[in-house]
Image (cartoon, rainbow over all chains, first blue to last red; front, side):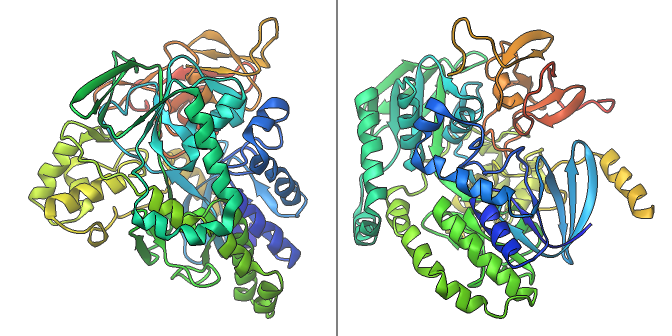
Length: 457
Length: 99
């Protein structure tokens, strides 16, 4: 099958782009891992109603309109489908229901969003420890609320929003371990820009207020440990000179989100280091095009900006793709008439303030902590290899199998980079990421073999 | 560890699935990885040390939810919605060649 454009991801950016591309009469396929459109932010938006939808809030409900427009757009929607290889030209290899196939496109838009930043600490692999984003997905998917002694540890807007949603459904949060730093000069100096989004700021204040009313707030602690026999049972931390211990059944952690970069890394696109939030993202031109002609990125995959910025960058990328394909000589004027740049800059107004308020954590990692969850490689093993090799995460990977498990470095990549930088006394920006190799997702030999038969037929 | 807000006394669940052979109530819209957090003894064993593990990210990036679904091993449970009668089995260690 050949399309003009294949969009990867059916969240805010991917859906907005697909709708816009269809308006220009362009043939689009939208591939998504999930069974229904909406991305993580609007997961289950077509199904959720009543108290769950009410608790998820107004920003969540806004997704329903866009999902409906996407369904009606005429884009060919391929749900529950994984993309495991992308080749310039463009060939995309997909698997759904255990069957692999290849589709072709003249241009590709990556709108596959973000993932939560993995932050290892002692006990983070215990059953009962998971991310705040994971818990929120459970709430959106089957109306799941955490039970027992529920603790949240982390920083950023998501833990506050999630806690508010849980409380709105009469759930309980035992306590919140706030890892954010007191607002420093950097955060305060970006406040004037943030005032352009007063409703956004007020939301944050209200979330914090709700959380403080419901459970214990812990600030200024260190050395968080999750402990238990076979599952989480206790949390320990140090506050000043005192060691604290509480019972815990569920610990939800969150230290911000980072773009998904495996696809652009595998394709050798030029990336830049974001030193405010410590992540790589593909370098994009004003239309969202990467250093590989015909490969575009929109939404959080190109740098964290949130859902509203994602919809706008999706529309801009759609105009850019139409321009690239030669079908829209008036892309510039359409962009101006729709006021896309002003709206995008307003949607991003709060971002510098949030980035400065919630810097990525930089606590020292003890040698015994598991960094690579798949291959179970510890910080100590990584440091030992880093000391005797070049400052390159790939040397660590070759020597320890760190990053070679099924997640392919999605959980350990940035931690390995930070440990290599630490050992060699280098700034993070001077250490690269793992080399990302195909396939992007595990695929069976059987799937690949069946693909060969198809090609010959 | 988790309970659905739809789970109320006297109200039937949307469907039944089987986790390691045990009948388990499940709800429309949830995934296999979500059920694993409610079913007792549904931990998988990690491939190196054999530690118990449960789903961590729920968004397809951590692979802690690898599970055998209707006989297919190494399935990412967080990407598969539940279906009535689905057979979910814990995967201990790496996938076997035959599954």
